Length: 86
Length: 156
Image (tube, rainbow over all chains, first blue to last red; front, side):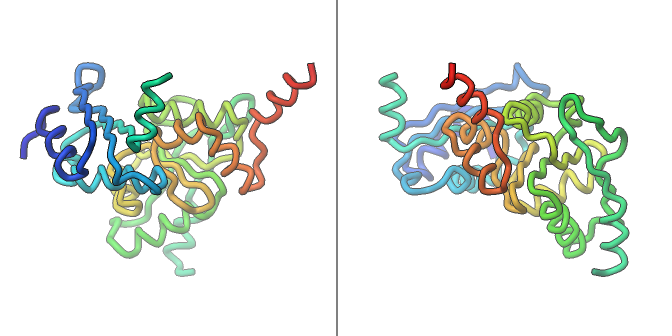
């Protein structure tokens, strides 16, 4: 099991069929291994926030026990487009 | 209710009165016994249903020990939610792991509204930003302080 921004990004992209994934290693700002992720996927459509976050958690079920702090933002492609237009 | 559960419930101290209130200092949750599977899930279930707003934090509302836990405290403060139960997982390793097992959620802080798991800091922040939190609080009979702010501004 690999715990790097790249490996997390690849896994999220694959498992969630994501249009866009960003993974930031926030470890330097925190006391231990930490990441912040942004996932854009059609799989989030029609799902409330909690369900979306659980999808991400399930995808990273193996890695999360080894991650101290985890921030996530989950958007549908439409939300992502709107956000970038602001 | 079993004897053990009753003892646990009695031992739970509630705090988190928010700014200006009289806070109960001292202990967070006393998780009874060994934290063995079924028993602990029942205890936690009772705990999250005991109050309308329940949060599990690293630290206390007066002294959060983590940026994310602090964010939850600040958001509740912004909405004028003073009467909520806050449990410090740093006081109790059984609780710290137990609440994660209970909600099937890997991190702290955890926010429960009306006995239901809502999410962590990310979700609470997004709910705050998109107005959902005001609505959810309204359903619990809690009027968000932010509604009053808007009203004041409109009347000027």
